[in-house]
Length: 175
Ligand code: IMP
Ligand code: MG
Image 1: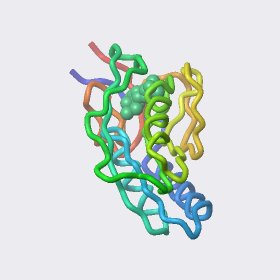
Image 2 (image 1 turned 30 degrees about the vertical axis):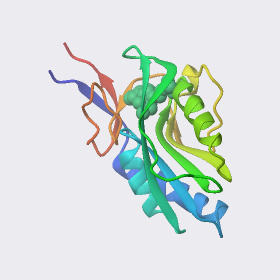
Image 3 (image 1 turned 60 degrees about the horizontal axis):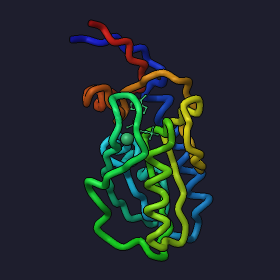
C-alpha cells in the first residue's frame, strides 16, 4: 500500500518555526529551569528539536498515554501507559505535544499534571487543528494552525507509519 502525501510544511519551514518558538520560550522563562514533558510517541521529533533551541537549564521527561476511542476520534478517557519518573511539585512544566485535535487528550492530561502541584504548566504544540476542538485547551505556544485534514510526518503517524518523514504532509490514502 502506498499513500500519496502532499507536503504542507517543509523541513526548512519547520526548523525555522521551531527556532522562533525556542527563542520565545527562552525569553519567557528567563531565570527559570524548565521541565519539558514530551508526549510520546508523536511529539518526540518536535521535542528534541525544540529542546535544542531553548537556551536555559532543562530536564526532559516523557509520558505516553492512550486514549480509548476509534481510529479517528479520541474519547477523552485517557490511560497513562508511561508516567513521569520524578515528582513535579514546584517545577515549571512545559508540555510538548504533536497536535491538539479535539483537545480531549490534552485537557485530561493537563488536569492530571496540575494536580501534582507544579509551579506552573504551559503547553506547546507543533500543530493546532482548531476546527475539530470539542474541549477548550489553552495552547501557550503553537507551531502551525492547520485546517481539518489528516496529516502525518515529523513524528505524527498514519497507522503508525510516516513518523520518520522530515516534513509534514497531508495523507491521500490509496487503496
Ligand atoms: P485529541 O484528544 O483529539 O486532541 O487527540 C490528539 C491526538 O490525536 C494527537 O496526539 C495525535 O496522536 C492524534 N491526531 C489528531 N489529529 C491527527 C492528525 O492529523 N495526524 C496524526 N495524528 C493525529
Ligand atoms: Mg499524540
